[in-house]
Length: 230
Image (cartoon, rainbow, N blue to C red; front, side, top):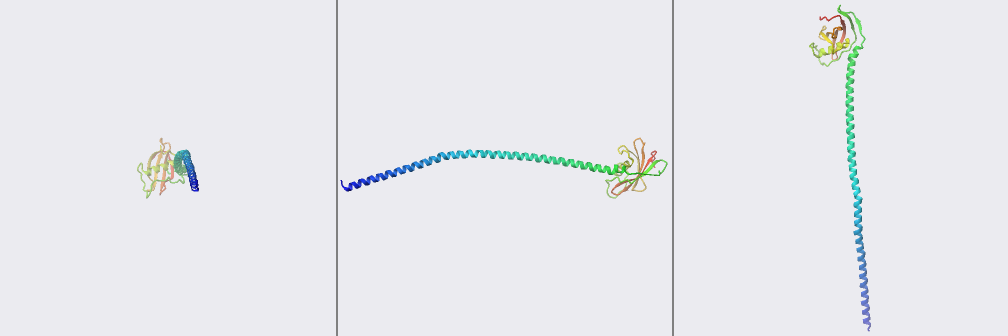
């Protein structure tokens, strides 16, 4: 066999060996790639499933938190409404107490104030007078404003305020008191009122004078034996 044939045979063997090695490498690489792809496919699904599982509780937690926040907001609104109602009740009670206090103060400044004033005996003006007395009484107060002209008509504001002032200084019950006469006491700002209880067992003549913006002020009281209209 010639040297040329031997060289050709060696070259062919070497080429086959190289081709076989290349094919083996490619197969190994392909197998590795296939394994990697299978791994991604398998483990990727597991990770997605795990992620979904981990997100579901979070979603539930967020929903629970929203429900809890809504309940807290509702409870807070109810508490606020209760506080507002309590404040309104307290405000109404305070206004009622204030009105009652003002009413009580007004009564004390009138009836109780004048009833507690120390009186002084004076000489009777005639034989029909059992006794007479004066004191430093206060004006009864008035709802009238502006220039004053006495109105003697029954039911007028003057008649009402005169009756109240007369009842205070005599101790008669205004609701059952009988007014026998109200007339001029010497000028437009002075009046005389003859009053009594129902059975005329207590008869009084009360002298009053008008004080601007303060009302009728009693100046003298006479206890009478009988009703005599001048």
